[in-house]
Image (cartoon, rainbow, N blue to C red; front, top):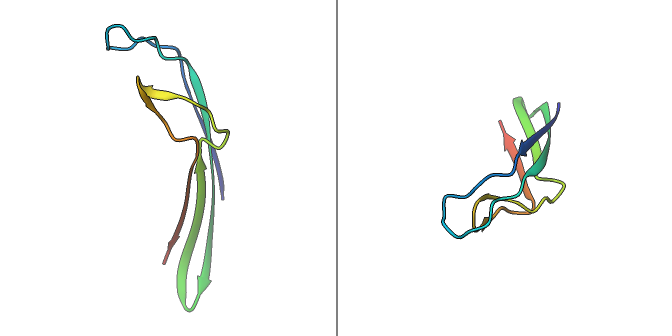
Length: 76
């Protein structure tokens, strides 16, 4: 299975006096999942990347979000 998602957040004001408004941003996430049998057990392997386009953005003023977040999960 393949997954693709996106989030768009428009320009917004901050709650801190004297700070600039936050710019709008869009992020894209992608993931892949595969189920299989091995050693008599049902397994699932997943890999994902959040913000795979590397957008620079802040959800809260003054706190930059990571450029990429990668992960891998293996479960039985």
